[in-house]
Amino acid sequence: MHWGISDGIVSVTGMILGILAGCAFMATNETLGFANAWIIGAILCLLRIFAIRVTEWMQPVSSRQFREDEFYNELPERVSDAITLIGFGFAVDSNPWLGLAAALTAIFSAYIRSLVSNQSGWVRYTGFVPMRRVQRLSLLGAISIVTSVDSQIRFHSLTLPQITLGLIVSGCLLAAFHQWLRLKGFMRSSPRYEEN
Image (cartoon, rainbow, N blue to C red):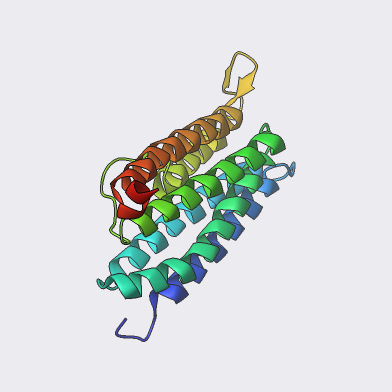
């Protein structure tokens, strides 16, 4: 912040890192150096986690400013999520449809979270929610490192990347359900809901 770098700039940088991570995962389908592509994708995921943390540290305290930051940071995050997960779906031994499902459920979970934040007056929820951005990226990074070492790990007919995407889809759906229950709780406690 002393150098004039805003949280919006950090968010856009995180988006670029996420896009590059998705491209790295797609590059694992190349016959030459696919292990290096897994490592590069893992490093980019870790860098994006760092960018997310920096953005959170830089965000101001007031609720009005937080609403503005939520608007300007939401689009880069969703673009990054989608391309990273879709790219992972196109990785070697993965599944494009699972990648697309993971991207859609992640975006849906974030949409429900935004509705809950709006109902709660943009107060941050500090409780546990499965498969948030940092958890997804940590999982992708860890699995990428494992796959770069041994790409033949399988559980019955499923590969490690396919299982990873399945876990992300399940976790995001569980997170959306959890946030939906919180949203119903806010609606029941609001005066407008009682009048209706």
